[in-house]
Image (cartoon, rainbow, N blue to C red; front, side, top):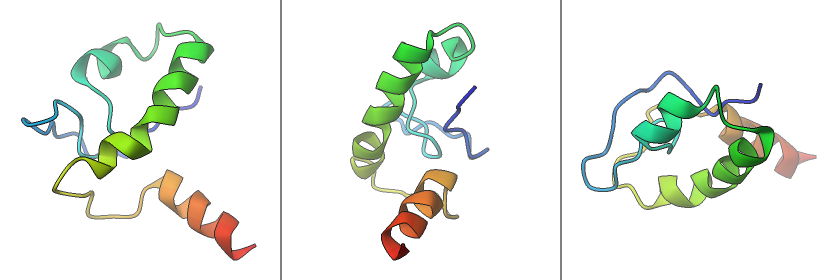
Length: 73
């Protein structure tokens, strides 16, 4: 099962999204019961959500690393 979690679990009070992965508390709590379609839809929204937050994760996320590696190829 694909998960955006990077073990930086802290919720932004302004947006309600996790600073690490960009999911809401409800999405985090329901992730295991979501269908693949719902998880994919949420995953597609995460980069835009993360851009709306002032504080960014301190380390490179897996998603960012894969995107960077794709750009190099």
